[in-house]
Length: 217
Image (cartoon, rainbow, N blue to C red):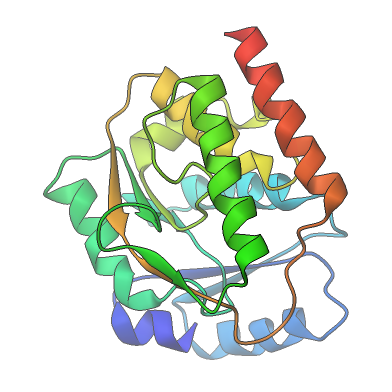
């Protein structure tokens, strides 16, 4: 959060803690007590990535501060805070309703990934684009900037995917609703700490969710 606030001093940061056993929640509470720009949302347990993001969006929309744009990003430095300005500019100057930090447009890329992660990411994106008819080059991206209006008008509770397929479903719903989407190039760097939560169960759920979304039209 220090890096985010150093890059964008006017931003507020929400940390979502799903009863993490490593002390993340307590540390975040300490920071929030010392800095009014830092907030913490505690949840009782892990309900999946999608549920956590929906809870964060709903929290942001309910705040009296009246946030005009809401971001989602990973907190392990795979999403570099220096890209926040470009994503915000895509919405304010480029008039995007959703700006995506994209690895797969000119100027974007990944750093430190083994070949099998490259294959899984690119293959999953190609699969989603083919089945759903998306033109988004990085439909599984998780570094996003939304205008407030988009999140207010989407039925967030109707988003059914719990795992990483949530990223695809959310973008698909935005495109279906006719909103303007822009992709901003970023370089995704392998996380500095921790391990990816991606596993076979999550990957299979994402594959089936794409088929389900297509069937529902």
